[in-house]
Image 1: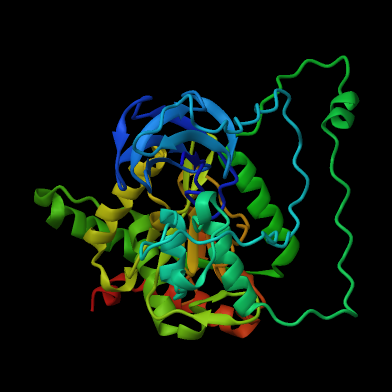
Image 2: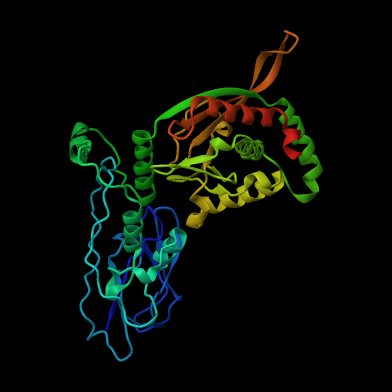
Length: 425
């Protein structure tokens, strides 16, 4: 019996994607694990593997088609002895809207209930790669689930539904949900600017995701802000010495490399602050997994440097350069920009003196780093001298980290930066 190949959800935030390129054509034989297409998600271009074996009967979505919703049929896979003519008609992808709309603020929507379909016969369990990965992470037995995909195939929604059913607390009937804000009408906004010249820019997947996540962050996370200045003179001198000694290895450390290391060690020194918000609990992390914001055309990535506390400055520098380069070409895998408990956003290199960064959920905090500037300061003897001073602002999720704990974390970061040699001890 012919099977529909559906648009996969290749990242947790993906709702639609662009079918960038087909790597097969109609009539090609494929087996499980073969790469059949390249899909552009909201963040990157990723390869899509076949789950079943058979012959490609029809390609339902043309290369370059954008706005293809997750779980929309994109091709038909035939079994032995079937022909494209005998295959059942598949629903084609709905056309993407031509006029851009202004997205409403995101609201939390419960996963839809689906009628269970009969599981395929035999010992083999049919499940999408994403469903298998989520099940492995959550410790869910796929054989206990009934799939809602074609021919009982287990998909992402089935695994997440099982997770939600196991973890969801009993509903409280007395608690009324807050009304969702009225959506902003694109036509109403455009009407305000009738007669004025402007260019209309449709939102791509990355811009939609940034809008949704940061709206969620500012609406749901109780931010508070802690500010400190740090003297960089000792760090700048130490950095110059190290770079001279490492020159023969082609290593050049940046101030940002020292900031990453300082934050990673501070999270170890103040372990209660190395935490994330998990809805009804706080997860205290063991390792210092530090995310660093990287600006790219049309948006940003926050690739994660895992186990940063255990890595040398030169190793952190090498990894950061690699992650930043691949972020700008949108070649990062989801596991490279998801996770972490803490983030750094550095606009100092662009001349910004200080700013407040928005927390990237579920992180507990983010450090906004400003420019190092020459300023007059009072020294220990009461005299005036010129020093290089950098402003830092720690945005903190009050659900995870209280004021005194946040202050302790920021003090540990400052101490590491003002005594850089100690970070190598």
